Image 1 (cartoon, rainbow, N blue to C red):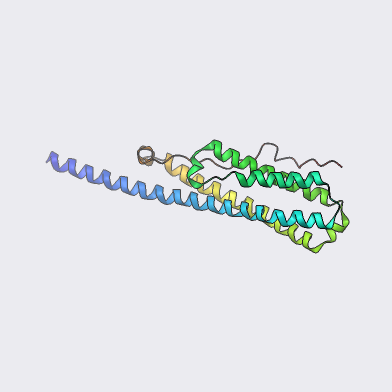
Image 2: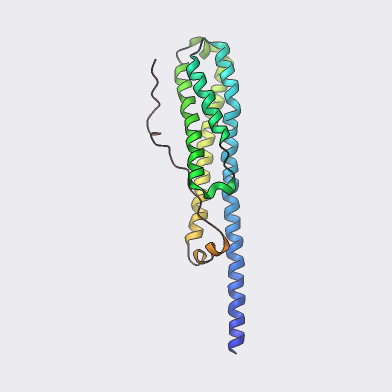
Length: 192
């Protein structure tokens, strides 16, 4: 009799382990998918910047320092690659986020400074690029929010009982959230 109870207990625990693993795999793949969307919109922004810079160069006697800052920030932001596998490393996520925030900040300064150039503002291609960049920034915000929601669902599942007992044994770790950059609550300071 004891033998059958032990076998039944092992079978039930086995099914629980398989079920827990499958659910966590599904949630983790959701995090990876959300991260892919974040990377897609960041790449879209990086792809628009060379066109923006060339348009600005062609339309105005523009401040070279501002353009150089945008180009350098783009270079830093695209040089840091963060794969879905590296999402467990909070330091890697922080470095990626800092590079992207630096690019966002330099683009903000570029847009503010560009307002002083009426011929640039009148250029249709500049206006089109500006609208695309604004739309991209909105997409980035949306996708980062979706990513954080997906991470929350995944991390919550990891911490809930009885999943928390098995998650570590199965090799699942918490994922870090995107966080607002320090000072992002203040508008960028631009001096002429």
